[in-house]
Each structure stands twice: as C-alpha cells, then as structure tokens.
Length: 142
Image (cartoon, rainbow, N blue to C red; front, side, top):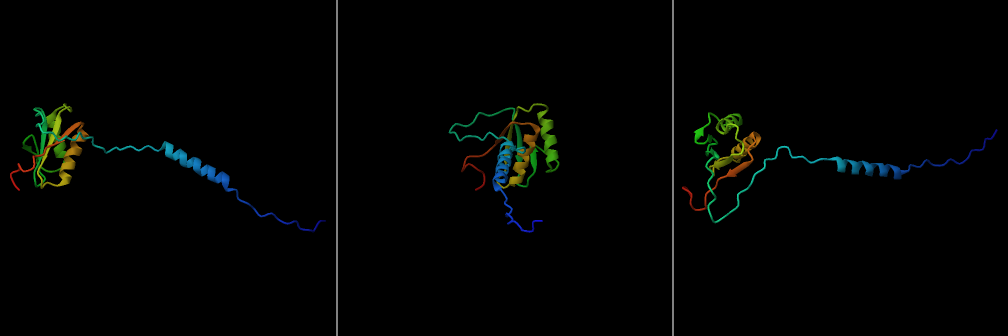
C-alpha cells in the first residue's frame, strides 16, 4: 500500500484552440452575411443644366398640395391613403410601367407625403421618378 501522495498538477485550460474556433466562426459569419436593401427606391436625380429639360408628354403627374392631398394627372383622389393613390396611378398607367412619374409637391407639403408618393410609384414598378422644381426667384409667393 502506497500512502504517499504525489503532488497534483494544476489543471490547465488551453485557450489556443478556443481562440481558433472563435476566429473561424467570425470569418464564416462575415463571409456569409448578405446586406440586402429590400425597401430601396431607385431614383435618377436630375442634373442642373442651363437648357430646360425636354418635356415628357406621356408622363404621369402626381401633385401634392400643401395640405397633403394627392392629384393624379389633375384628378384629385378621394383621400390621402397610399392605397387610394396606388389605385389612381394603376388606373392612369394601365399596364405601362415605362412611363415617367413627375412629382410636383408644394413647398409646404410634408416630407412624408412626398415619400409616400415615391414609395407607391416604386412598388407599382415605375423606374423613372422625377421631382419637379422651379427656378429660384420665379415662384408665385416669396
């Protein structure tokens, strides 16, 4: 019988393999992550030119009043809901989604009303959306 006790070794945790696994997981997640913008509206912003832009005869026009009311080609919608604007645009455009949308918003209209109009047009499949402006100093009111 051996009653003599041997000195015990202290347990040791090897962190090298743990760090390797964590770094491999980090690299895996960085490589496999995709950054998708699902709610993006693509706009072609107009450039400033000295010559007036060519007029587009078949463009659909959305007018937004200072109160936030929508007019589609001069016809007022019955309310301000996006569903109503969507129906009016779909009715005016039929199946032609290659038309240009021109948004004319009053300077006092809310930003939300303009974004709603752009969102509705984008969801309907219109690719060319223009925002009409006036030259500085040619407005009716100061």
